[in-house]
Length: 332
Ligand SMILES: Nc1ncnc2c1ncn2[C@@H]1O[C@H](COP(=O)(O)OP(=O)(O)OP(=O)(O)O)[C@@H](O)[C@H]1O
Image (cartoon, rainbow, N blue to C red; front, top):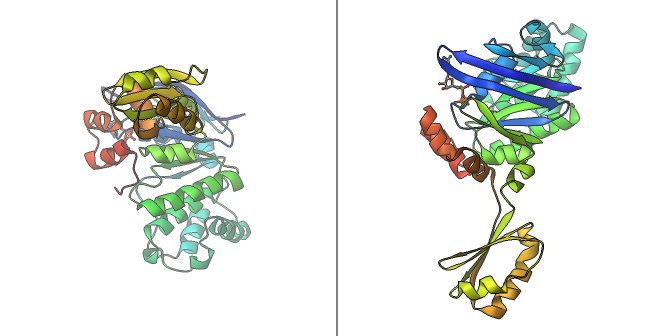
């Protein structure tokens, strides 16, 4: 069964169409990333699936329940971690969880068991009795992930789960998300504007731009759609190197540029030695590099804009967009 089925979903704010006729499915146990610049419509889409916003038109089923007809059923089946932290800093980690468990009507005897289990899952058992005010940003985010799992949801929604964390902590939080998915078997839908996060964590990535899903596939498949890797061979005789490129099925394209030759190949790292050997027989080779396609380049080829330009045009904050634009691990 699919964990999520979205059909023709549209959500407007007045005249503004924030989510525009979107359709997709998420399989049980999958990690789906919604990747796009600030203002693309990711939060609106997630909030609609979480029943915080009503669809303007179209349908969505989450864990087998329709968001419009059975919002209560959807809420009971999902966990959610939003951008704004929602922990009580004066309570300890364990108290925060027990409070949340009561809100969800988890029975007293089960409460203790579930709390211990989720704290273990995010490695916070030893810090359970510290006030959350004394937690680091990464620990607090891990506690939020644990809280989202307390009532054993089928689907966990995470809106920018690592935003505002430093690069090292982001990596750790990602590892926990991966672990929750594998060990708790929960389907995860997360929004992100970090290219490398989508690439590293998600089984499939939906690229969202201007309210639409413009592509949805596994990260490698999205990158492969660009035509593989490019081996760049620097030389002062590009014409000779061009002629020397072997006539093999794995060579997809050969392009001469001013000071070198770009060879499009299926698997750059495996082919680079053969290409350099052939090129060196024909001319002096000065530099060699392998350029792998990135999700950033996928975004550019699909939308004609970089993520940075797209965020500027939708009014997103430039600082966040800039870090997405480089795909780097710099802080927000
Ligand atoms: N409550 C609202 N009222 C009016 N317009 C809104 C509202 N919330 C969002 N929007 C607009 O809808 C569009 C999509 O916003 P949304 O927050 O869903 O994008 P996003 O991709 O999640 O970006 P971010 O990561 O910055 O939250 C934007 O143009 C935004 O300005």
